[in-house]
Amino acid sequence: MIPRYSRPDMVAIWSPETRFRIWFEIEAHATTALADLGVVPKSAAETIWEKGANAHFDVERIDEIERTTKHDVIAFLTHVAEIVGPEARFLHQGMTSSDVLDTCLAVQLARASDLLLADIDKLLAAIKKRAKEHKYTITIGRSHGIHAEPTTFGIKLAEAYAEFDRNRARLVAARAEIATCAISGAIGTFANIDPKVEAYVADKLGLTVEPISTQVIPRDRHAMFFATLGVIASSIERIATEIRHLQRTEVLEAEEFFSPGQKGSSAMPHKRNPVLSENLTGLARLVRGMVTPALENVALWHERDISHSSVERMIAPDATVTLDFALQRLTGLIDNLLVYPENMKRNLDLLGGLHNSQRVLLALTQAGMSREESYAAVQRNAMQVWQAKGDRAGLFAALLKADPEVAARLTPADIDAMFDDFYHLKHVDALFERVFGPEL
Image (cartoon, rainbow, N blue to C red; front, side, top):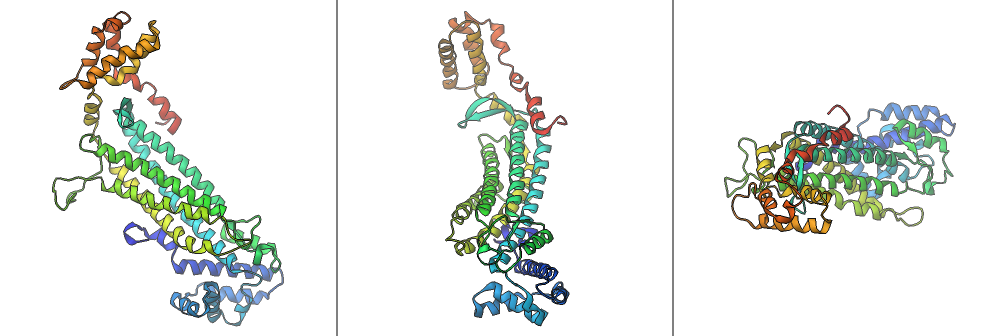
């Protein structure tokens, strides 16, 4: 995490102060549950809450103690004892460190998920607004980077909306998967603590009970969570890559907003570069790079080792903070994206109507010519257009009309009818209804 790519609300979730506050709540709730079961005095549980609920946990003091103990949870409990007094001996009864660490991580990841879901909701709203605006803005579709058939810029955005709507559903599921509580003691057998304590703590923290754990919550849950973040990052990159291609000088169908006073190059004053999209591409790579370590964390030794710990201390904050920033940046990019319909029309007409080749092919087959003969007839005329120099306007239709094989099957009027670009847009409404419902 660096400030350049961080936002305060997400960063706060991963601060030491937040972590120690959650640790205290886990320990205090567990002590309350133990008191209800008669394991510890109720007065002790009450004192722990009274003295700790609004206490300031001194991060520097905890770090100082840890330099001696070489154990972060023990250092924290020692510091809490300095605040609470003798009743602190009833904290951590029958618990193990992972009960605190894993349950805390679950709380933090759930809170991070909530911020990310809010980010996606804002992004979806931005995409929906621009999709409606450009529902019928005709543009050329490309496969392999080469002109194919017409679509609309609104359809491109509708595709992005559907993709992030799927991502939202994935993140909701990943949040549910990760939000589990384990207060099951060493090795997870509840030998020294009642399962009712776990249920109590889970309820208080808004988590569900982990059905069965070892000494740690199973890491397949975390792997699924980070894999979901990786998929979301890939979707961000897909849109960023599209915008980068559309902003190329030779294309210039869409462009990132260039604010007054903004500079594109230290050397070339004329430059307007797709810096936001390029930045998003890089951030997506970072988030995806954290997926493999999460997958490798699944295979721990027996009931527990700590090979996962150092990984998660880094990837949990870094992945969520980075993705939070990237989603916010993409939302701003979409909101302010400059779209150039006149350039889209210019590019659409660049090849003199070749994008209607399939219509001619189909018409010839319906007129009795074999598919192989039809393909050959259309292609030989298309290749002449492809190789022609200068203005190609109307050239493809003219060549088709002059071709004896084509003319024997199709009249000039038939051919002209196949060069209506809006033929390709007749199902735009149906596509939008599938994605957005009837309101758009």
